[in-house]
Length: 348
Picture 1 (tube, one colour):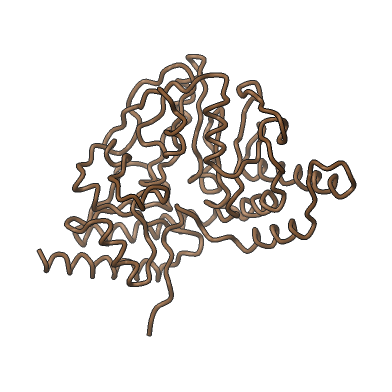
Picture 2: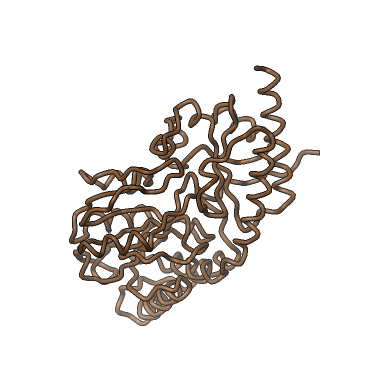
């Protein structure tokens, strides 16, 4: 009997939570443009502002919030409209940061992917947790260093919002579809409006376009489900990684603090592309690096920045856990890993 599909690519996107789906349908049923002055528009505006406050409360954020289409747009706004020019970004940032970083210096990282260079003045962008390895940066310490020089810190929290407490940053980007909300909605969290140049339009003049009320309602509902499952995710990943290590595999950045939901694992002698095909043939969805670049078959710039050689980097896949992942799922992926690695060993 064929087993049902097993989805372990939650770092790319995670399924919509039931509460978020219900909230989104409610928003669609009561839809009106929140910028319209009539009664229906005013009701939509009130619902939007309520969603804004609910998102802030769920995140424990005391500053301002601009709804965006996702983390990529939030990062673009922060990097192109901050009153300080980008001065530095970590060498392991997401492409959404790198494409807007301009001439900003790339900060070196160690073998665990942790920033090791002194931070300059200006706008500095450092990911809270890396989307490929799960490595968590000490953002709060970096914030102190940056502010001591009169600078600002931008944190990409696409992977950590709704899972870890927000770091102490001046600008934070989040994306709803990473924590069980819908695609097409995210936010830029802003500690002080004075750090950004407005552009006119909606969202208090910081983002043009009709506001996505159904998405905002669903985003708030998803965040309000909490993060109690992080302990379970950590136990599942520990079981997976122990089995992979025992089977001759390697765990990337095993010595660093990592987000419980992401594991980057190397199967020596088997390319990531071959692994994806074989896992997929067994009904298991995993990924190689970021979903934004995995289809290009390029060697991960993240692993390269960490000092990994191209051959080793080409053998790394990412297994990412979601709220729905169960212990039996780990047993299944462990068995699949052993089978693929075993066949490779026999062929060598």
